[in-house]
Length: 254
Image (cartoon, rainbow, N blue to C red; front, side, top):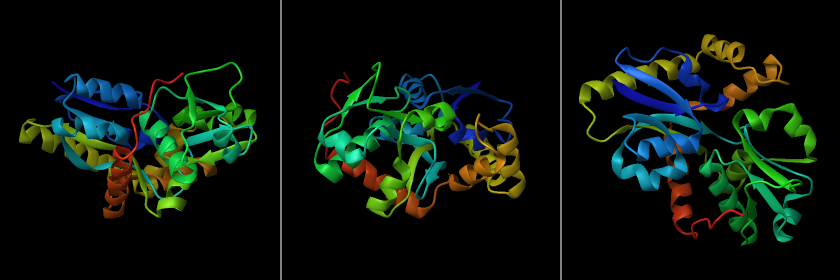
């Protein structure tokens, strides 16, 4: 049985639009957990978060599919109770999601690019100055109403770099049989082509409508996401990984 791991939030919902091959088992997990499972050799294909690719790329054969956006993504948000410049320059604590290293590293990189300073990252605190959230947590009405300022990391990246951002990419494990790889790629292609159609978009809206969203908001959200990676997406991903190599690894989160 070929094991496939995908991300368990609404940004990866496109890859639920077709049943996986009969010879596979499909599992869902947070982005960081997907990376752990693939690193441990416990699956043969995965939707890997981009920040994990430098370490895991030697084990993986990439596929031209994933989660990409040009500009605002809508589900990777920094929510703050003060302007962003003050947050970083006055070293106010940012409570980060533990589910996504990619979002954390993107936030670090953008802060260093803008101000030359590292944000203060904490796993949790009773009254944080800001929270970095992804997926379903980022779009919940309660989270949005709690803070006065909202910053979309996809939009911030695009305004600074003028390139799309790739949050995750599908890979198969190096050495997987050609037949199994073809079956997995055919399934992902089916999901992607369905997600790109009007019918597929409506299916996504009906099946994945977060609390507090109306159908028009969900349609706008799913229309932003690309399940098929373009040349510009690959350029944006390469730039992010190059810039990430140039900064010191994130120290222990407080």
